[in-house]
Amino acid sequence: MESYTTAEKRERNKLFRKGFRQALADCVDPRLEARIEKIDQRAAERGALELQALHKVQADARQTLANAKATERTAPRTDRTAARQTRKEAEQRVRLAERAVQRAER
View: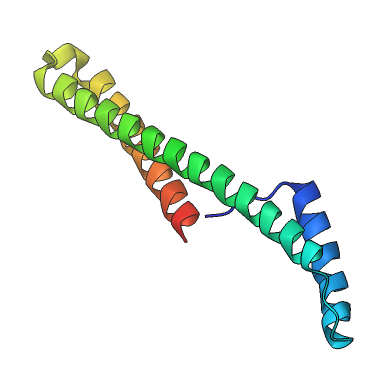
């Protein structure tokens, strides 16, 4: 997963266009390719950190859901409605976290 900043996207596109023109003239500057690789490497590192953070959020959401289910099962009859609502909210957070991880892994 790559995570480019807006400035990195802009610079990488500019360098790519410049490299394309140089490739047509058959005289590509190796420093240009090195700068593009450096941008790609930074974006890949940032993307890996973000994916790791998303996995942590997903694990935390799953743990919260497990706690909510246990609370609902052990709640007295008067508190069961509130516990059910808490469980449903926890399930929604798990679904959102799973979708975010799936989008990031694509």
